[in-house]
Image 1 (cartoon, rainbow, N blue to C red):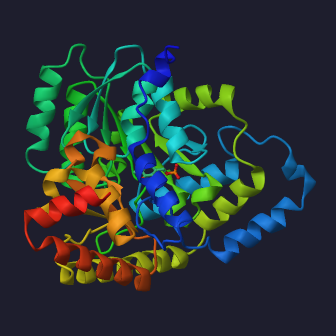
Image 2: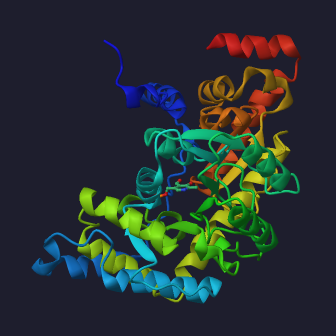
Length: 405
Ligand SMILES: Cc1ncc(COP(=O)(O)O)c(C=O)c1O
């Protein structure tokens, strides 16, 4: 039977292939060190958990909530933007709470896309950036992920050669998977470009608080006038280690926020009220918990870069995010990222995310997530060292390693 129109446009998740190998290795008793999925392993701060427990006892919170988010939560998010970025938002018209930022992004795509609309999307990138629009009938035109001096000329080319003219541009800095960060000057150029070319900017700032080198990543909304064309998405998942709670936000341009709120009003009744109240408490807290989360990832990053480096795999230290974007070591480069990742599971008992899962331009890299403790990261490095050493004997050994699977 022919596959449904929409499903045909969604290729099977590449990461599933590695997951399957991981599951079967585990069922054989292997102790897989899982640096694959970006699924934070740290517990949610206890004060946030306690707030949830307290609120859930009140039966009034058991009813349907509001799809846009309760007012106290939207106010807490507006206050966070004021404190952290100096950006003033009206919680009534410029803030919507979402069921994780992924849901918000996908439903924004659904709200604004007409069939055939062109959207400029980084490649490699987090899959929902492209597939949110593909599911909504849009067409993706890939752009580079690095926010460097060739970005604007590449955008100019993309706009010149797209028919119809692009509807929107997706930004994601700090980036998953590349960990690239953007400066405020970069955003200034982008906002000017977007205004000139009538482009909507959708900025994914999920890693706003996971940075290591003393430079907090800016928000594109800090650019004067950016709200005329921009919506930005943030997430509680990484900042407060709350991935399972499904809580995120869209903020910015009133017309776009209203469009998202309208679509969501048909789809959901908002997150469970106790979750929203606890999320508001987290956002209103003094930031000490965020600092702790940041320090854990920073230490893991340093251990990973050092231990992998000693193993012979030189990984650039990511300035932000919980990921390192690592070029496949030379002896294995021609395998491509999927085969290399499968081999790592089988030969080194280490799982990483193949770069191809983030787009074709990611295929010579893998993404290493810092979601295991320092001891386990060192253990992963030792296994990888053995693997690299056995490949050091020349291309015959690499072929033999590949063939063993
Ligand atoms: C760049 C980026 N955006 C969005 C998300 C999804 O976050 P949420 O849990 O808020 O849906 C992730 C999660 O890994 C991400 O890396």
